[in-house]
Length: 240
Image 1: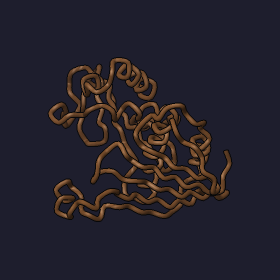
Image 2 (image 1 turned 45 degrees about the vertical axis):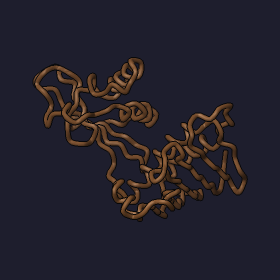
Image 3 (image 1 turned 180 degrees about the horizontal axis):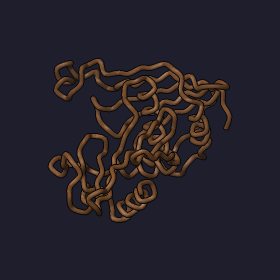
């Protein structure tokens, strides 16, 4: 689906106040870039005092806004998601309101797909705005004393990923990165299960960008057996 401009309102209704919020994106497509207006607004806070918000870790002024240009390589992803047909059943409690060139487009039944898309494009905005750095995940398959540490550098702003092994660099398909991240951060990397360096014993270890190493086979009880097997398979595809 082609478009000149779209407006997305994604309402996070699956959490209560004062944590719920709405993300609004206004995107205009040009021949060379996407012009984006981004706004995050916390909702339903009328009954909370500043002191109560501070007790929850907020400041009382937690909204976000940014205006700028995103790489045109986001265009295909946007076209794909706005073209999704209406589903038969809501997939989450959240709500997406979409207007394409002023026309309302139905998003019912695709809430999960929209949720993931919003996460990705928000990360692209954060990187472009220099609020956050691109993501780096480290990985080590320890079976010898000389096992190499591999770095996967992921740029949401450019929708690119590069694998670094010593002086060797190679690119990784974005669809593979999506498969990885949909499962990787569902894991619970728990305090006390980490080390500051790669352990000596054989195993598959990862640093999820917090500077610590975790045994990925034992990192979490939140993944099903099938999800864990899928995750390990994707990791094997990416890392040597």
